Image (cartoon, rainbow, N blue to C red; front, side, top):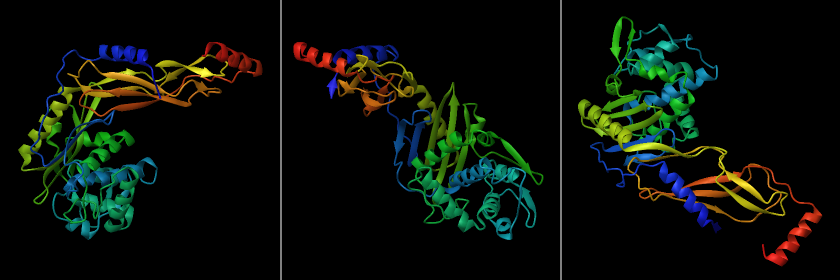
Length: 380
């Protein structure tokens, strides 16, 4: 691989202008949560993690997967908000948090959704599970299967509610992935998570997510609690176009859960920012083309390169363009030619593929002859 040193110098200088001049790295932070993860939604950068891949009992936070399946059915036209589903005796008798549906009634899907999202109703979860899957057990199998498809590699579901079961487990990383997918896949339905209250059968209940009431940009997602699991929360907050996802688990009470989640989100917004270093289609460097109708071809990125970095990131960020050259003709626009390597102190290297920005056809026979003669005479 050829290391273009002049290019490296230019890119490093350019990117450094986009960064703050303060030198220390972001202040480290610990958490009272036993398990935690804080992720930037747009870049996927993990800002904080603690035992993020250890399976835990997620309690009601696993209802996010129940909600995902319902949203998925709605989006694909297999279910409608005004469809009604029957309430079984099993659903009616279910303990824990309730929406207070009545056995024998038929309840609209939209009401059931609000019953799950706002009221965390176990009874509503079972009505939805039985209506969609035929039984709660069959629905739980669908949860596990669909979860694998969307990247929940360590999650296994045994019910629709998060009711304690030794084999009903998730990791906080999977919960963060699921939260991101809910937001990205279903923007038309995600606003349900921000509703502060819902009334059904004359019973008004407030949303159990404490951060919704703090005017800090939080617009979802779900709390969870059992005696064994402790207190947990999956939350997402949006400020000035930047979204963070936080999952904490294993806290000792309602107030510690709320306070710790607020503290970690504030830290994430305060200490980090997103910087767009390269725009899609922007020329990073031009590289020589052997036997090409044009002498060079531009290297570009297919998408914006945005990094989440400490606001106090060091200025000596290093950007290196790597490619094998000269590139043999013909070159098709979009061909992968090289990569851009970004190195920042305290972070693993980041690599972005670089592609050809234009077509470069091969020279004709005479042109190739001239090129060979030039190479023999001039060595280039």
